[in-house]
Length: 97
Length: 242
Image 1 (tube, helix red, strand yellow):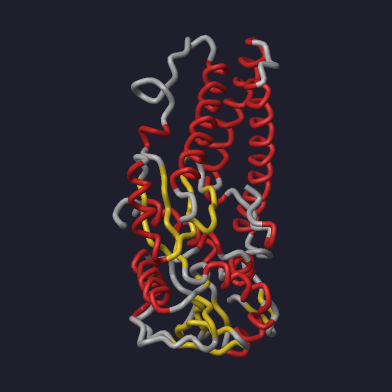
Image 2: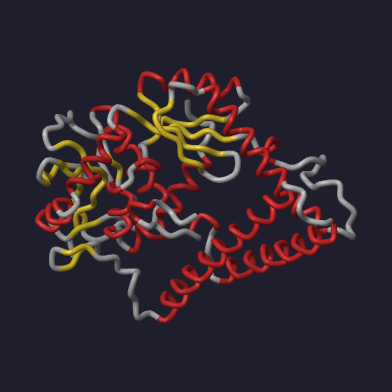
């Protein structure tokens, strides 16, 4: 329930159930990986648009991002996570992704 | 264990005509929380993960927003009793009231480009790249998606000038728009002129600010699981409204 002793809490934050704990950790780790992946990909796209990457570099970066994207899909499926779940609410700052 | 399910926050002095039944046919009621009030219903426990319940929740919110300014709470936000609810709201009353002011008199309209507009070049959505350069094909597809997104934003900004109070990106080719009630029809018309799919009006979930952050803290386990389901369900309903 959403409160305890007058103070709100979220029961899923700390849960001794090993399965839930594992999924919670996977959610956190995959969200951070997704954040880094998006940041790196945006930087790479910016450099492509600016013409600062050779064809060989574009191919190498693209293959890396493609492989990472595929691996992320596998991990999300393994932990039953959807794309829309890979996010963190930062309160007044909004969502992380 | 009985709980109060919190649907939305409204002004304490908001006058509401009788609302439709909430989850499980339970009658909603207003609980004063300082200068705000919560729309709640009583239940034996946290809500279960049922699609019907989700739509009961949505229908009630739609009725509330027709009558007064409202901050919708994420599905599954529950409290043990009125005292607990009042204390939780009181602790954030200032930011919550500011969030309510931001959405006062407005609703959310979702716009998105049809799938065919979001796909990259090529009849089946795959760029015409040699199989020997999958990395380059991937990067070019991402680049094209980014450029399509920018193009859509520019078109929307031009077309909706003066009609939209706030924007929130919702993934590739999709935006949530905060629109005053009086402008809903015109926004939908202009969106269609651009070849976009518009749906709504929806409760302004994308613009609730502090209520969203508070809901994150208050949400029960059921709400955590179903928050994403709410979004997906509404997204799938896009086009059936407006």
